Image (cartoon, rainbow, N blue to C red; front, side, top):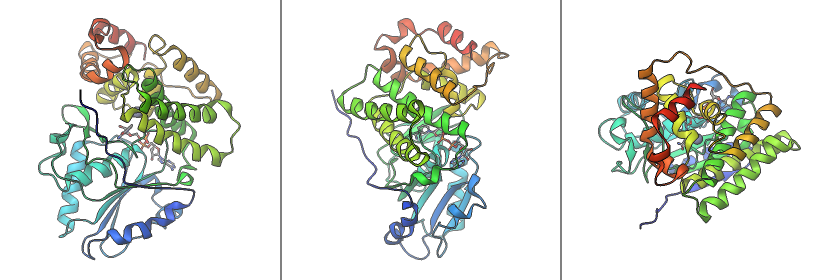
Amino acid sequence: MSFKNYPMVSRVVFGRGSFDQLEDILAPKRINSKAPFIFLVDDVFEGNAWITGRIPLAYDDKLIYISADEEPKTSQVDELVEKIILDHKDRPSGIIGIGGGTILDLAKAVAIMLTNEGEAKDYQGWDLVKNPAIYHVGIPTISGTGAEVSRTTVLTGPDKKLGINSDHTPFDQVILDPELTKDVPTDQWFYTGMDCYIHCIESLNGTYLNAFSQSYGEKALELCKEIFVENSLSDEEMQDKLMMASWHGGMSIAYSQVGVAHAMSYGLGYLLGTKHGIGNCIVFDHLEEFYPEGVKLFKKMKKIHNITLPKGLCANLEDSEFDTMIDVAMSLEPLWENAVGKNWKQTITRERLKELYKKM
Ligand code: NAD
Ligand code: ZN
């Protein structure tokens, strides 16, 4: 048996207002005046001077606004890389992603593809990246996915939704400034926050669980309960704690795996474009048979925060469409093995997944 040798984010800053340190952090990383920093920024911040006015642009640096309405695609990564190469003679000094999981994943993927040949789709999978990425920085503005700490960047390609999982994927630097999350709308706060909660439940109830994952998972779950159930925290405390919960949830799955909700949510995402956070919620709501305690508490949190999930997503789907979702979900073998064990194929059948999808 070989043990994972897991790469970590090399440097991390934490604190309200720490975003202001970005200039000092980047300065020594500038290769020369022609090698720009490229800032990929969620377009929700366009015209928001409180955020964009603090982005330290100099020389040929470029700020590119990106919509997070859809999850990142391999073709989108390729287009961004081509644009950067065409616009600048020198290889950039770094890529800085400012936004949620969507933008963070794009930043990681672009940093990788600037130093690796071919197209992003060629690297979807495990350990296919050959060359180290260029310097890349992640600055989350919404908490929950763990994308700020993970070794993957989840991309939808022409024939699969799968991450670029590699030792070169994690950020070189992360800035955790919880204040940046203060204007996230409540629904989105819940969906992305629940991604973290579901990471904990799937990790803590999985067959891959070990003391490493458990220590992070239990801490993240405790924080999620404080935030989403107990309701005794100030807004600032909630922002601070959810940012740390996201980090710990990400660390927990780093050394274990996610499970049923993620596998099935990938199916929804691939076929219908359902986004990760809300997709996980829609699926998890129906998984009592797998995670009885976790789902019970989830329903309670939904109620506390007045969240109504969309229904009937799969009501009018053709058989072939169910097949597509089931193919995507079942291809994620490690997730099933973690959730149900080595013999998962005996109990996880196409029919069973179809019945579950039909409820969503
Ligand atoms: P997101 O990045 O898709 O953003 C969700 C919404 O929140 C968007 O409309 C965005 O504009 C808005 N938003 C973000 N910050 C805001 C702010 N401060 N104020 C107001 N609005 C704000 O959301 P997400 O849930 O963080 O990310 C989902 C993506 O993360 C998916 O593409 C998923 O595949 C990916 N993901 C990656 C990993 C990983 O390990 N790499 C893990 C889980 C999920
Ligand atoms: Zn997730």
